Length: 465
Ligand SMILES: Cc1ncc(COP(=O)(O)O)c(C=O)c1O
Image (tube, rainbow, N blue to C red; front, side, top):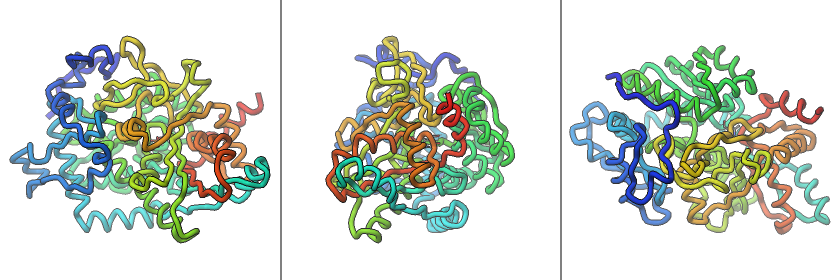
């Protein structure tokens, strides 16, 4: 079934102006009938973050025999955020995807295969590392007092970032659905590399869309994708443009192709699936903290591009109200510069790429181009569940500027011999503000979402000029 739907090149977004109050939606990517159903199904506070604990009703022979589609439709709302703002043609695909995902979650063979892949292919569990010299550095600056800093080493995962946790699991789902090829979009290239590797392992064709500017900045990842057998398709612009192009490609090839979402955005069930597959990060952290100091962490810190590494760490602890959850966005050249990716700090609610969430948009609801030195943080939106955590106050969100991230990258490299990705460096940068405010011995875990080899040239060029 190939689609005749034509998407506007301009935008796949719904403007703030158009949304209120009568929810008139004019863009072809969003279909008002489904969206308005979604909007009336707001879940009670806190319930949406653990949707998997309440399995959906699923008919027996799904997904190949969906004789009563309504039984498996859920709208995936996190408060007022999330939903499925998509044209009718995609509803069946998303319903099938959700059904297959739920079947896989309850399939012991799938779970065993995933456990084996996480252990033997990705190299999990990743260490929870006590950063002694970084800890001492902050103690020395604060009269000998300060927190103990631990690093969750996602940089040690296969291919050097958390992205592979999700890519391998979703490629396994694509395989279960009998699909032959995978399409993905990437910014920093880490998700592209992860998708390419997962496809190679599972014998799936892989096409990765990537912005031309990002291809230049992250050239080593482009080479890796090609070596792994993926086709890399350059797109005019950056990650948001690559995402739009990948969606357009997928919609034209629904019968054969799986859209492998790399982060917690897009229409339901994509954000829920990615969060579930990344939640291994937090589960391991809880176990490792118990082993190391016999308790929970006091504070968790992660960078927020769209939110997959942050939710991966936070989700396990959402019910533990004594654990502080802190997400760090990219302030680029500054929050007032107009050149940043601080969606939660400066965005407003709108619909983009099939979901309702905070968005960087102008008065007319047109998407504003994001900026960050960490290319993987350059997205104008953020996951709906992340927006929900902000709105309920369960998590705090702050930001770090480009130059603060570069300093943090050098600091960790020189104090601990670990080169963090520039994305992760935003989380590390916030320690400068956080550490002086914390009591002696507070246990802080920072998610090092990826390694920084891909960024070495950028950092050296900037510090030498
Ligand atoms: C190493 C690394 N960390 C963080 C991110 C940001 O993505 P997310 O917010 O989904 O974790 C990226 C995105 O490419 C990345 O490559």
